[in-house]
Structures are given as structure tokens and as C-alpha cells.
Length: 149
Image 1 (cartoon, one colour):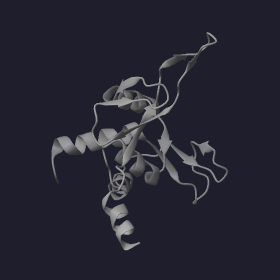
Image 2: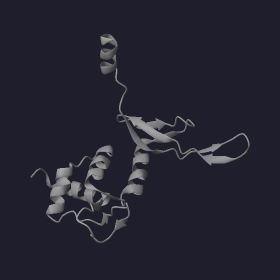
Image 3: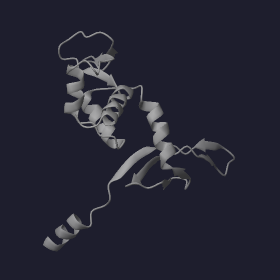
Image 4: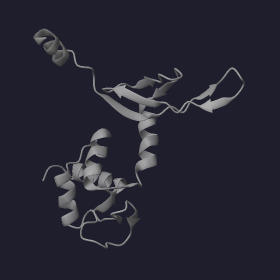
């Protein structure tokens, strides 16, 4: 048992990062064509990924660009943004985002209500503010260009 535990700890499976959905059109025997739509995961910094559903190859850089375009305008809480930026390979600590918010550099675009809806007005103290991913990425780029403080 001890040896099996050691092997599991040492021979861990690689961490995979989600990179979007397969956009290949798959033709079936009956003549119909459907979008594959399988989830695509990459290991490390691979340049290409092969879809496990249909075998199509995709360039990771293009998948990331398309995913960013789809989510840059979406609204997230600071905790959600921390996970999203880390997954994109552009990590921004939650403390940094809170600091930007307290200094007025990062402004909420909406607030999440208790029922899950979003409102452009702050109604309750418990409603978490929502921020746009594009704003956080722009502040991160500005901070990188100006160098360490």
C-alpha cells in the first residue's frame, strides 16, 4: 500500500488547461453534418491540441484568442477574475484587484443580486461588485509597462 501511494504521488497525471471547444464540422454516415463541440484541454505549453472527439487539430494560440474575445466583456467577481486570469496565464492576485478597486482604478460595471441577476445599481450591501475582464487585463498591462513599484 505504501509503495502504491508513493507511485501515485510521484507519477501524477499532468495538469490540463481548458482551451475551448472543438469547432470542426463532423460529417456522419447519414449525410448530416454537426459541430463537434468537444472540450479541448492542453498539457503545459503545447502549440497544438488534437480533439479527442473527432481528431481535428487546433492551434492553441487561436483557441486562446477566440476564448478571450468571447469572455473579455463578461462580468466577474474578484474571486472569479483571479481564477480566470490564472487560467489564461495572466495571473492577477485578488489583493491587487481589491487595491485597484479601492483606489478607483477598477470600477464595478454591475452588482450581482441575491437571485443571481445583475444590476447596474448597487442595492444591498451584500451584493458583490462585478468587473469586466478587459478592464483587469488593461490595468495589468499598464502595471507591467510601468515596471515594479
